[in-house]
Length: 213
Image (cartoon, rainbow, N blue to C red; front, side):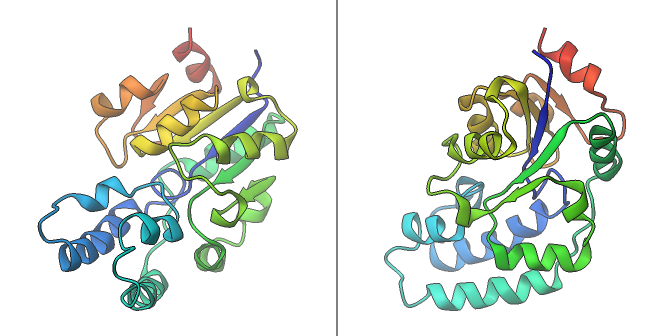
């Protein structure tokens, strides 16, 4: 079936921030859970509320402090595009493909991104944030809602993800899966994807179609 919509995770897919977030959450997890190394990798793809509920539930007094640290950290972050991302999305739109962001980030975080990249409103037909869904990745709810928002069937959509939870969410939604090897190596994400790429510089729709054959 012809691809009618392309759905993109934000961090590590469109914007090169995943390493920065891993650094932040690594510091917080080591501060509070020094006996659980690598915990920051487990929470990837979850909303801030879900991270608090599932990891920091026993530390309610610390949650406002962590939020304050995160807000200050995000103000200082860089929001560079993943190589080739903007040109690839612009090319999709020229071909009549609908586009959407599907991110676990909240609206305050998106305001920081828009401050640096006001053109995002022109690149995407819809931007879904943590406020738009109740289940976190790997649950497919966010991708299914994005497809519905764009008026497309899941099988008419391709989803772009870098994290294991995100890749599983796209797969569970019944969509074509493109894995970005920006956070995890290509051989690690390939079992969860139809095609894996390092970035968007040489990617074409035909490549995605061939990857699903």
